Each structure stands twice: as C-alpha cells, then as structure tokens.
Amino acid sequence: MSDQLKRSNEPVFWLLFGAGGMLAALIGAALVFVLVFAVPLGLMPEAALSYGAARAFAQHWLAKAFLFVVVSLFFWHAVHRIFHSLHDIGVHAGRGARVLVYGSALAGTVAAAFALALIGG
Amino acid sequence: MTGQTKTVAVLRYRPEQDEAPVWQEYQVPYGDDTSVLAALNYIKDELDGTLSFRWSCRQAICGSCGMMIGGKPQLACKAFLRDYPERVTVEALAHFPIERDLVVVMDGFIDKLQKVKPYLIPREMRALEDGEYLQTPEEMDLYAQFAGCINCGLCYAACPQVGLNPDFLGPGAIALLHRYNLDSRDGGQAERMEMINAELGVFNCTAVGYCSEVCPKMVDPANAVNVNKMNSARDYFFRFLRPAPKQGGCR
Amino acid sequence: MSKRRPYVRPMDGWFKRDPFFIEYMAHEGTAVFVWLFALEMLAGLFALAAGEAAWGGFTAFLASVPGLLLNGLILVMLLYHGVSWFLIMPRTLPPVRVGGRKVPGSTISAVGLAAMLVASFAVVGFFCLLANGGQG
Image (cartoon, rainbow over all chains, first blue to last red; front, side):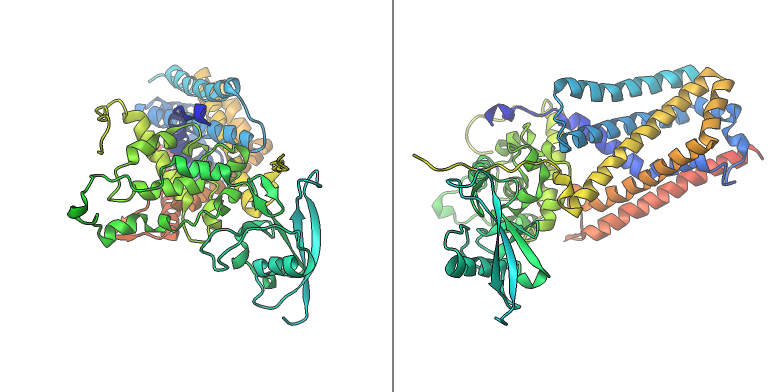
C-alpha cells in the first residue's frame, strides 16, 4: 500500500474531464441540434450550412476559439470517462494504454487547432 | 409471530469445509417486526448453531451487522422480513473478504481508517488551565453530518471502485478524514492531504454515488470524496506557490 | 495452525448486480457519443479547410439517413449526459450555503437542469438568429 502513496497525476485529467463534461451537459445537445437538425426542421435556411456561410463563421476569431474549446474539451471529457469505464468492466489498462488514450485527446486537440488554422481568418 | 414462515437464504462459508461459499436455506417464522438480525438469531438459536455473524446493539448505532440483504448493503437490524415477498437472501458485505459465513475481514478498512488520522490534531495547543476548545453551532454544523459515521462498512460494499481496487481509501475513511478537516479546532489538514492526493486517494472515485444512498446514518461520503478532488487539484497546481510548511509543531 | 482462509469474491459482472450500477454504466457510456460528436466536428473542420467539395460531402452525410440516425442517437445521449450530470451534481459539488443554510441537493439539480435548458435555448436561438439574419 505504501508505494501507492505517491501523488496521483489525475487532477490534470480530472479537471479537463470536468470542464468538458460541464460544457457538454450545458450545450452539447443544442450543438448537435443546430448542426444536424435545425435545417431539416426548417429553423434555419439551407444556406446557413453552405460552404460560404460556414467558412465565414469559422473565420471569426471568436468562433474559432469556441470551436477549439468545444472539440478539444469534448475529447478530453470522453477519453477520461471511457478510460475509467474500461477499468470498470475489468480492462485494467497499464501505462501504455493511458498514454494512448490521453494521447488521442491531445492529438484531437492539436488537429482541431490545425484545422482551424487552415481555415484561416 | 403469526405462524407464517419465510425462506431466508444465507451464503455460508466455512473455510475448513467449503472450497467456496454455498447458499443454504432456512424457514424462519416471522411477524411484522421481525428484523433480518432477529431471523439470523432465530436460525442460530433454534435451527443451526454453526451460523456465524456479527451483531451487538440491535438499534443501528453499533455498525456491526452490515451485510448484503436482498443484494443491497444494509444493517440486518434495520431490514425487515416483511419487505421481502417470497424469500430474502443474506450475504456477507460485498467487496470485503469473507472470514466465515456473514463475518468479513475488516482489517483493510481499519488500516485505512488509521491512516487518515480521524482524530483532532489541535490547531493550537492549549494548556489544561486554558479550558476547552470552543466551537460555535455554525462551526459544528459544517462537519456534523460526517461525524455520524458508525464505521459499518456499507459504503464500501456499495463502492465498485473499492471492489476493483482494494487499496482505494474508500468512502467511509475519506468521509471521516473530511469530518476532521472541516473541524474549526483541527489543524491537521496538511498532514492528511498526502492520503487524499495519493494514487490510493480520492481519484479512484468515479462518482457512482451509491455509497451515499446506502449509508444508514445519512452521511454523504460521495460528497466528502468529491469535494476533496477539488482540494487535491488545488493542492496539485498551487503547491509550488505556497511557502514550505514549518517542520514540527502545530500550524 | 490457523484455519483462516478468507474468501475474496470475484468482481466479474458487478455492474449487472444492482439497477443503480446499470444506470451508472449507462450514463458513463454517453462518453462514447460525446467522443463521436467531437470526431464529427473535427471532420467538419477539416472538410471546411479542404474546400467546397469536401464540405459538401460532409453536409450531405449529415443530411443522409445514416447521418440523421447517428446524430439522432448522439442527440439523445448528450441530453442523457446532461440530465445525469446535473442529477449527480449535489454529490460532486461542495455544499452550497445561502443565508447560513445548506441548499438541498434537489435544488442544486434543479438549478443545473434549468441552466442546461437556458443555455441550450440560447445556443439554438443564437445560431437561428445568425442564420436567418445573415439571409435577410
């Protein structure tokens, strides 16, 4: 038991999990609705999802910041919870799996920043 | 007793003869006021003297008779046969090793309890002639609910993370740790933080929340654990900004 | 010699033992759908960066039957995530005191769910105004 007294690094991942979970709880469903169902249901004109409109939106720095925060935090939230669920169902992943799982969220974060940079301003 | 009987199925384990636990059924006469503990005592006195279980007060304060009743962690003195239509299953507390029948090995829990220093570590030492450590009702209200813990172990039987990692400090010990941290007379938080921050500490918890549901004394251990996640995160990121703690003496 | 031989019960299938655990596993499972939505948005961003044809492919997928079915499931799971998130919040949040009295857990959950409702309508309203305003 005593060797387990070393400090856990979980606070880093737990805070990202919590922030992403709160954001997803507050507006996650609304974002899916806006992106996928608002146009078919007639709440938004079809042109709202056109290439020009979407690109113009994503070129605004505020929209960029918002999209980056949403995509990256959703990844961090999801991988943390999935990692713990694997433990729950008896898949006790080691250090390698931990690096892989959280590394995927880091890759998602970098990829989101990269794509937003490609879209330009 | 009304002359009716009910089936009580008990998970038996006698290490000298059973490879693994086995179910054994007993027919027990019961009335509206027959608790599961009373039924077990009837079995031991009238049907089968070899049945082992722990009990003492019969009134939900000693914390000895925790067991899985109908699959849920409960005190046998606080659960009643009338609430189970056909039969009731009784099994040793989950997530603890079975010593014998309904008796579990509590050593790991007692060890954790000692590790969290569940006693006042005075903020300032007072000489006898200085009188008592005073506290206002408002200050007591902050920790009072956590002081209700009777160490019965039901929250451990409700916590899958305890079952999956027996080293995890667990809900009860952390609730008691929190009770002393919240006490205005106590200055031991820094000493207890190591346990909270450790790999066996609060971050084993995945907020299942069942520990607080099953507590017979209305303690909210899940809250104690989760509040300390935030405390631990603060400690993790701001530890370098604090002056090093003075060695020895009280804070 | 000691006859002690403590028996440790296996944890296999523990999550099926109690309805409380089944619900726990179900709301933990919403993370898969949060992950899928993050991936979908990331794909959208790359499509937007790649050009008009790629973006057209992306929106065509969203409007297709498989796309609508998948996103319908994601929508339901994200709603479930939100509701379960705020229902567990009284356990995870430090106790809130108003006027010296502890706010009951049910109030904390209710405030959280109300915030979810308000934020959701604000987001949908904002984007609808933006879209319709942009088109005159």
